[in-house]
View (cartoon, each protein chain N blue to C red):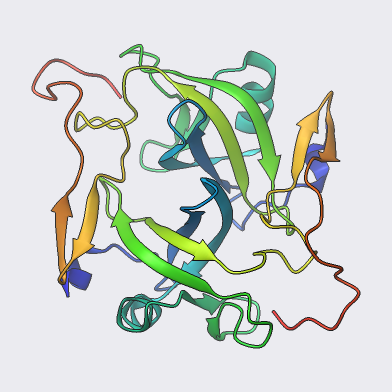
Length: 125
Length: 125
């Protein structure tokens, strides 16, 4: 794979934007190292590198809220990935389809989405 | 503004995804420091921090290919911004509407968009 064309940062990571192709919504931004990109391409399921936990993170592995990858693009600088995905259930552990559920309105971040599940229920990211 | 809720990285930056609201396309990923976020919110024109040139970058200032900001969202971790924008002409200095004009196909990055302008023409990013 043309992986060597990608530019990873000093931590060996590249940001990956997850874009849901059914709803045309950006649902999250994650980070991948080279192996996460490889695993994502091979399995067709978005696999990130968790910076907080320092390990591979198959998004939705425990919750079932996986991201089926339809296509993978890169930008002119080859330092960002854009993934066209089908998001199962919801991307956000807070119960929203997209993690970007707050919008700046008159200087305040207001919730502008409806929850699609109750985050009080057991939910593994 | 609720800027103090945003989490900037160790370089004082936050990634900002530019999403064109007319075409539903992600057109680029840029970075902002706190003042760039403030300027963007105040002017309604996307203003980034150029990491390569280490200065403010009003996208399209010289080319006219500006991004008019319709809304600004943040994610659950408040460490990424999503900007709903109207992209004038094109986002990419290579002549494509979106910087994400290459897609991975059978292990090779293939150009999957048509150019909307000739990058050989004088063009200031």
